[in-house]
Amino acid sequence: MSDSPLNDGGSESAPSCPLCRHPAAHFYHRDKLRAYYQCAECALVFVPPDYHLPPSAEKAYYDLHENSMNDQGYQRFLNRCAEPLLERLPPAAKGLDFGCGPAPLLARLLEQAGHSVATYDLYYQPDSSVLQDQYDFIVSTEVVEHLADPLQVLQSLWQCVGPGGLLALMTKLVAGPERFANWHYIRDPTHIVFFSEQTFLWLAQQLQAELEICGADVIFLRKQ
Image (tube, rainbow, N blue to C red; front, side):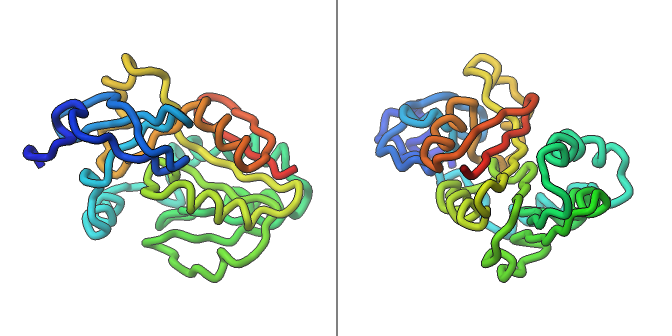
């Protein structure tokens, strides 16, 4: 990878944005392993495709995670999204946990509150038939930062959200170039796109959604 022109600080043509498809982005940061660019249109920070892991390596990295259905720390983490989401749902809502991983604890927490929740994960629960249905809410925690084509995935999920429904996302937000350089979030090699508040404002406008940023890393998009 050391011979890649992307390692030189952007002297070659910059890549297109994987979210808004803007034809060029500007160089944002470089560490020992990867280069990062930021889109001038939607402010997404992203890793060019040359640095993406192949699916087998990505899956192997996910397998190292030790989240379990009985992990109290994991439950507290997920509750940062589940608790405000539950406050906004009607009784007995129908939902989907997209990217649930091998331990769909979030789905269980929501089901315990009286909702029905289907689950999907590319590697661990790949039944794509659930992506053909309509839902009152879709929740996706710590998923969007892994997406090579976030536009395609988010548009597909949005089509599955019924009128008045919610798309609830959980991902940490870019806070600026100085903090980015030392940000633990970029140390994960499977994290390849990084959203900011400005990016979600752009996305909400494109989807004609009502945007609510709840806390540091929970984002709600409501279909009007």
